Length: 415
Ligand SMILES: Cc1cc2nc3c(=O)[nH]c(=O)nc-3n(C[C@H](O)[C@H](O)[C@H](O)COP(=O)(O)OP(=O)(O)OC[C@H]3O[C@@H](n4cnc5c(N)ncnc54)[C@H](O)[C@@H]3O)c2cc1C
Image 1 (spheres, protein in one colour):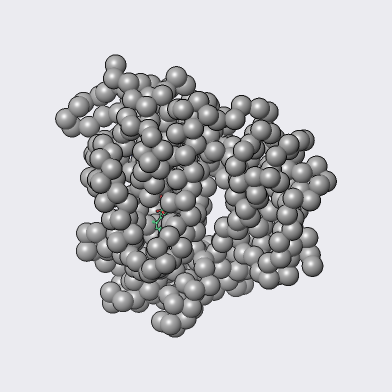
Image 2: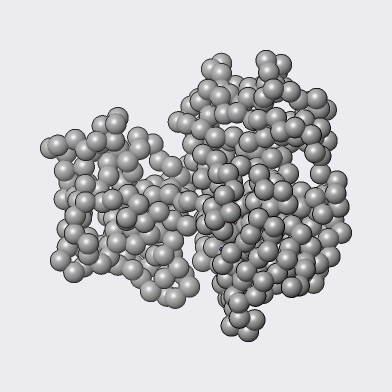
């Protein structure tokens, strides 16, 4: 069986950044395996602009952004295989993949980086009551139909969920001549970035209904109507609030889930983000297997995915060079007001700055982010506003991260 130093599964933004970083740090025998016919992952279908503001200080489209990384992969001569699906990995890092030219192939890797992205929750996942008719699709599928294949998925459209993909599709479908009747959101606030609400809904006079969800879909073959009902604080429909809307398409933008079946199959411990538990080098609980990008936790902005890919590439390079710290794992805990924090542990002999990434449970203003190690304050940062859809980050200097013990806690404190 062929042996390789580093195998990267998934050639999206995270996987490419990870491979590039590992190569720059001296790892030579790297291979990227990508199931699609091109590198770049989901950004291939995101033809709107707004990518790269942090990374390049420019506003690029998705394909423009990713092409810069494809170029680096080419320049560094990092090998990759396209149309290649990884079907299995084992605890001792034997990877099974399949494609038309190699057939079913096994490869022994010394280290693996999982960069498989995420998938969208569909109609089954949210159990919408009513008929099982055509015309109900996810926002990402509608985006792929429109931007890659040139098909408009409907003429009168209701969008469920106000995450960024839903908002961007509201604008895109309107520009292509569809009537987007409304966006309906079950939460009392939008899950999208403020700039997307302004640029994708307000500019096109598309109403956003908060605390409202689909209580019924009606249609014999194709969707004919949806019923939107208000919900109470427990997310229960409130009788008497029904709004019947004639439409032919319901687009679902109701959440992304890390794509993790390969890690699940080998019993890799999973966190509340539905991604694997990782330490500060993004190493999972299985030695030598790293994770980054949307398969670790769902990101709002691709620039941060790229950065995280680099961190995983750096971690894998250190692992292969036998330079990773080895002491005890100090747990990192999400305290008051925080829904999750990442990494979930830091080595007590960590020697590098650590960026803690987290999300808040609900929109909140005038707040301090407190990071402490067993009662000792490591950092206190003021934020005028934090919202759940935006990933927040706090960088802690390595000097403060030395000699950690018990646990690190991230929590919010009102000013
Ligand atoms: C529909 C959709 C729209 C989005 N729109 C935006 C946007 O407008 N702006 C923004 O900043 N972010 C957007 N995002 C978020 C965006 O996905 C991330 O910012 C970033 O692109 C994720 O990069 P990634 O490498 O983690 O995942 P991906 O780009 O999804 O890449 C993962 C790659 O892994 C491959 N793969 C998966 N499993 C296997 C396997 N078993 N074998 C081989 N290859 C495999 C996939 O084919 C894919 O190419 C969107 C996400 C989705 C799902």
